[in-house]
Amino acid sequence: MIQMFHVHKRYGNEGPALVDVNLSIGKGDFVFLTGPSGAGKTTLLKLIFCAEKATSGQILVTGRNVARIKDSQIPALRRKIGVVFQDFKLLAGRTVRDNVALTLDVLGMPRRDAHRRVEVMLKQVGLGHKADSYPPRLSGGEQQRVAIARALVNDPAILLADEPTGNLDSKLTVEIMDLLTDFSARGTTVVVATHDQTLLERYQKRTISLRDGTVASDEDTPRRAVLA
Image 1 (cartoon, rainbow, N blue to C red):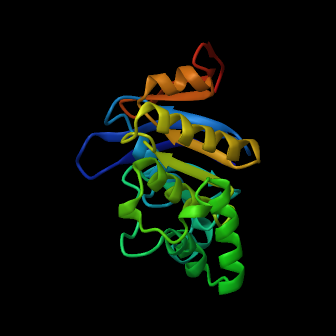
Image 2: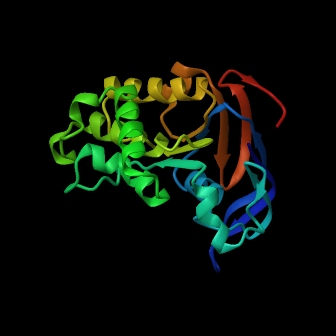
């Protein structure tokens, strides 16, 4: 589903952001991407959904070589990728329903079909009763679930989450992570960037650790290392 071969990323005259990264993530995998601030986690996610381009190396996403993809082809690729940001990026003046439907509106889905899909997704994330509410009136956990619903409503093959629980308390963090593991179990490939060690210990998923832009370790659980 996601493969990287000798990927390097450098920004201008700054030091390298990523150095010779090699990894493979399969369909339905749940992977934690961890490391200290500045290790390259966000940069790696940006390369996957084509917000940045690698300086060198090859990146395959759902079978497409994004190192060679044309700018005009990027929107089609992004339809297969859902992204959840730490700061939610919800539209305060639109209802929960409209926020989640935004992705489908961009894709040009007929309004009736979009409405039906949004209702199903909101029920899946436990927010069916909040469809007509506005984001400022929701709790932090509810806002994050809206963001996840929006990312998943078009049934993407891949979900990328950048520090999705960074602003939440421990109880809400567990709710959000349980939701993401549920979707992974249904076949969505999930990659979560986090520096929260308690999540790694609780969920015991494959963990790719970055340090100074390199893959420091790639473990199938936080306790047992495997070859990349």
